[in-house]
Amino acid sequence: MASPATADSSSQAVEKKDPFWAPATVVGLCGFGTTTMIAGMGIASEGVNWGVDNGAVFPMALAFGGSAQFIAGVIMLRRGEIFPGSAFCGYGAFWWAFTLFLSGLTGDKAFGATAPYDIAWFMVVWALFTLTFAINSHYHGAGIAFIFWTLVIAFVLLAVDFGMIGAGHTPSNGLWEATGIDTFICGFAAWYVATAFITAQHHAGKKVLPF
Image (cartoon, rainbow, N blue to C red; front, side, top):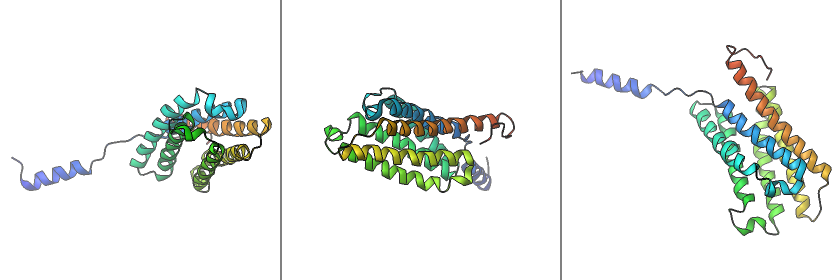
């Protein structure tokens, strides 16, 4: 039978031993990037109708952009990495919230007369959330900085688009296309950084693809 001292030291060793969590960077960036690319293509081609008629965005947003990305954020926070963990949890929640908002699951109010203004302010607060990360993104590489700054622009453009609609104006096709193209580029950049990261993991940490 083990002595009390031995038992105590054994239990302490078990308590101090943390489970190993691999980086969830690839899952988080791909969840964000692929969903954002689909949304960007929809915005550029369908304008204001992309959020209502584009059936590809909502399932992707709930499953990959929302759920998978949020889980990736929790893993990164568990690893003690506050920047990617907070970002992944934040944008995972964004896709859940935005999907619920536009799918009508929140009730008829989502499609009322004030809906365009509601969406515009929704985009404004997310632009501010993104700015928080953008001004600190340069510590995490040029690729990450590019993602966040193009995302700030995307949210600002979306706020302008829906603000114009709320004011009774129709955004031009060119403005919708610019919004969609910037959104797509942001998502593509996230996919690229994820690809570069996992490639580096298979080359002993060497940056085969710059990011």
